[in-house]
Amino acid sequence: NAGVTQTPKFQVLKTGQSMTLQCAQDMNHEYMSWYRQDPGMGLRLIHYSVGAGITDQGEVPNGYNVSRSTTEDFPLRLLSAAPSQTSVYFCASSYRAERTYEQYFGPGTRLTVT
Amino acid sequence: DAKTTQPTSMDCAEGRAANLPCNHSTISGNEYVYWYRQIHSQGPQYIIHGLKNNETNEMASLIITEDRKSSTLILPHATLRDTAVYYCIVRVTGTASKLTFGTGTRLQVTL
Image 1 (cartoon, rainbow over the protein chains, first blue to last red):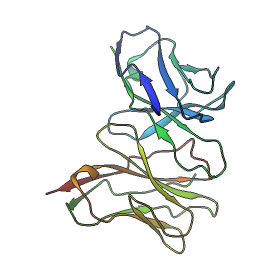
Image 2: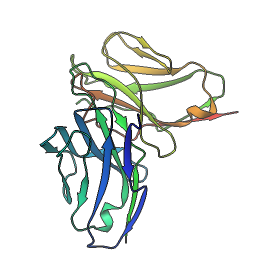
Image 3: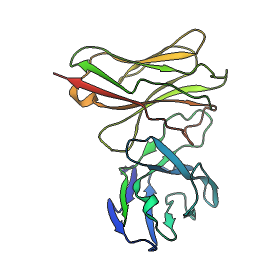
């Protein structure tokens, strides 16, 4: 299994540009999440999904959109990039089962907005 | 979810046990304690979790006090590869999603 994969690894955007960060997992996990990590900080939850067709907002959702058309993929869209969105973005997935304790994280996408 | 407090940084000599404390004095009866670590800006990695009993796996041991207000993660024989930021997280359910990460403890393992 490849686990959780993210593309691209690095991206530079100009203010106002839009782009989509890709996330895919091959573990048949129901739950998928997007986090951002600013320098010297912990991770903050942006959006999450409990299954295909179901998404919800996390702690810092403004400026981001998500959709979940398949179990495997959970793309994150930046509608109009701003310098405040410069961060490292991590995607994560886990099983939905009640006794699931481990969340699997991807390697991250490092985004710079100028 | 209950708030957690961890020291900002700790040092440990290679081969010695690393004991990382976490305070979660407002923890509720149905909240689990999770530990994750993040090595050099990689994605976080799950280490261990517990509810009220001490737990051990191939990576670490978790000691939870009887009143559950604090816990300690123990890496029995720290190596240089254990240098990382360690996060203590309290989560209300048995599911792994929607974790709230603080700033964690930066553990530096030295020769």
